Amino acid sequence: MTTNRIPTAQPARRRSARRFNSAYLFIAPSLVLIAVFIAEPIVQSGWMSLHDWMVGESSHRFVGFANYTRLFHDSRFWNALRVTVVYTLVVSVGQVVLGLAIASRLRRTTWYSTLLRTAYFFPFIASLVVVGIIWKFLLDPQVGLVDAWLAAVGVSPPAWLQSTALALPTVMAVGIWKNVGFTMIVLLASMQQVPRDLYEAAALDGAGAWRQFRNVTLPALRPALLFTTVIATVNGLQLFDLVFSMTSGGPIFHTESVVMYLYQKGFVEFQMGYASAIAWVLFVIILGISAVQLRVLRYRDVD
Image (cartoon, rainbow, N blue to C red; front, side, top):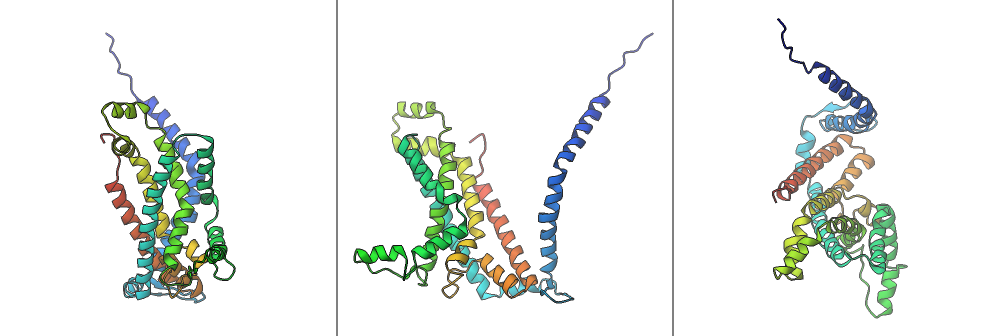
């Protein structure tokens, strides 16, 4: 009498386990780099934020959440947070809206549209510090070309970076100019993937250019719009390079961002515990805003 044996899946499972272990060997170097240069500094900064940590001192007194309590009563921090939020809102919205408008105009590939795409994208590849220094020179009231051109046509040039009313709007305008090319390229690439059949069907239904843009183009661009909005928001909340190179946070803290204030406390005054608390609060703010954006602008296949 013979019995039918049911084949087991153990050999297949062992092969799967070997492939799984081999995958870990390939990603191990990256995991080590992430642990050493990202995870460990994050944990260390959290530990430092709970101490009165001053550079050069041999001992660091544990103070619990005293740095956070001090932070929430710090008027200069709230001013820096207000500047950062205003900059982020204006630049992210302006960058996405203007990038979408430019991408729509340059959708067709011609020699002049290719030239304009390159011109719009070129500032993005430049360093933020370089961009800030160049614009600081161009807007200089003594030797700046912008003021010289305005004076040549009879317009009294304003104090772009020295005025408390114009310094932040000027930095925001430079931020939009710097990053709009990146948004344009991402949206343009996504826009060119929309099937032509959808536009032809909309045209047969009597939809004009605006209705086609609203009902066909925008829904297809939701993933790209989500990506560019989140990236623009995160970059805006980490504002440092432009204000450092253009205004150094002035005049009278009117352009001082949260990261600029963190730099002042941590690397000028050497209050590393307090600076770490600022960094953690900013991290929580960025995480919360990004989560809200992903929730509100999330893309689903059923959409």
